Image 1 (cartoon, rainbow, N blue to C red):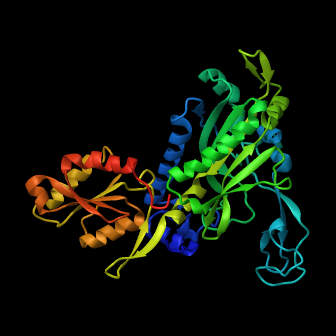
Image 2: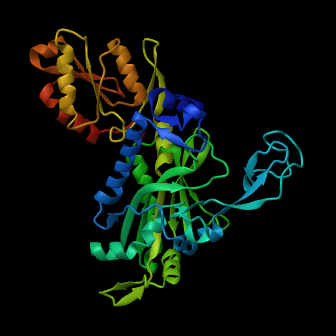
Image 3: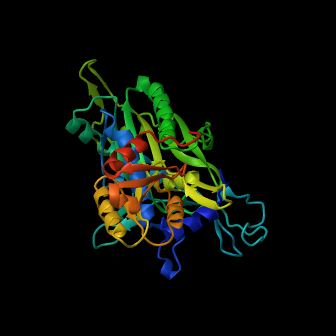
Length: 443
């Protein structure tokens, strides 16, 4: 595998339409990014892969889509109004801003080199404030949610009763979250606007350790199913000084990004903190009554929380490869798992004449009912293959003169570059089987 740098990924994303700088025509906004034609497909496919693994394949997990704006009391109960702060310092010389816990305050400014130039640390709340209604005063303050989990907690009873669930059960959600980060960096790794894929699993307090260990293992296996290289993944157990105020136990799944090991997902034992707080602040009984044991209790919550936009950067970094072919040519290839690749099948006519292009266009339209497809008729066939390799398309189909005689086409596999001849009627089943059996070398 080639050693990939963040600059390489950023360049590829801009050139091939994965990610663009937000408001680029106005100079850009450093904390926000737009997902282009291939980027939105990749992001949607990762979300779909997660949803299938976490919701559709399980009997005891249901989905939710809670509102971004919530009653402000939610954030008082959750502790975000009181605890969701970062220490902030400014350099008095160059005006650069830093998180006080991420730099050495006794050292010179990292930006301008000035000595003894930092202001005293002050607390900075990470929630975005806005106002609901025509009047802007303290009574109309609401927040853009900094996490999606609270929407699940306040809907816990609604989901429990409407779905006729019993503990243990889970509620999953994918949605936008907003954090007014002091420092945004590393491309789309840390931004002010991002998307989360979260599942909150409600358990009996006596079984919290069993389910914590279960979800820790399940979530690591999820990334392996996605084709992520195992050597790039590891667990990081939170020590006592790292635990959040609500957590009894926590572990991060870390990935080795081009800029080092960083958190990809968190698995947390949140105990009964959240439901107890919301019960206290709302005055509503959020306990659970077990009909069989006649026991009433407030469930503990095991949380799995992954960043969707962060996962996009992870799979781009993990899939990127450069290899030298036997003829000395180099090719860039993104080795996406076929289930998350932005394009599944590309269709090419060998030439743009003699009916080859018409046949290929009709075939590509037919395959749209089964896969995300792409049609390309410009340039040499080898160059078209290279373009698809670079955006991670796992299967390419070429229509040539033999096709017009017997309806057979060439099916090319991205990773091995192997080419086989199959009948047009076999394309769908052949590609579906290849997807089911796909294994990335080394995973």
